[in-house]
Image (cartoon, rainbow, N blue to C red):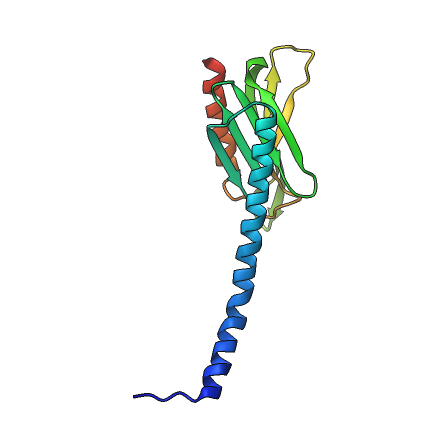
Length: 164
């Protein structure tokens, strides 16, 4: 049988708690932020009499929801410059992807750096200027984590809604 010194047990326990506490704190903080963001999104949706059946959240910064019955898209951007908007798809003629990038040369290799990605809505009424909803902002995030795929996926989903 192994005997453990009480002092060693206390020091080891303290070290384990000290190591785990930042992870537990961050997890708690993230869950609290996520639930606050979701509550805000749901409040905005219900205040506009929309009930999204399809959702997508990414980077704890963006949230899209589609109410296919009423043909309305709810968009929420959180963070320093929050935005809440609703797009009535009945008034929309076309959805396109707006992309801004720059070319950087590293040695002999040329790379495209994505700076901005958004969905752009073109309305049937030509006097109504196009509306963009941001999918990715290169000033906020240093890497792309599937945002191009998200933009393409939602463009296809919305095009199906526009045809129906």
